[in-house]
Image (tube, rainbow, N blue to C red; front, side, top):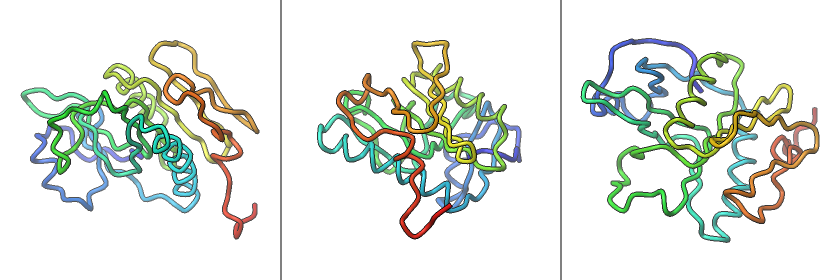
Length: 197
């Protein structure tokens, strides 16, 4: 998740990759942004979402679910990268994956779904800027997850309305995952048996 601006010049892809695989950075509207370390709750929520989506996607063979770490090049200019994001969980439909994608490189485009799990240090304006960019670049849905309030905000490309899910509600995701089961707030925010609140 994004948080501290550390540079304002547009970087090339090669310059960004030169930071190395351990670098925790994104580019948001041309600004190189350092991603803060996160705690266990963040990773548990990410794992829950990844598990639910991946189980469904593997069964129906509709695409691929990627955990945190895949860099998406959300469009570039001759002068450098304007937006390069690393969502916590993402999904790409089979038909959205270019046949010539070099798997050793970042994905050349936007995911069909991007999930961003908020961390305590995340700044709301940067997250909203990312949401807008995702949707402008072709992402069908962006889910922003708030661990402290146990809420999920669903942004859709075809709607100006933000749907907010809480409590034991079921997330409406039929457009990309027809027939999916178990996509509930209880399942998304479920803690391991060894941890009780």
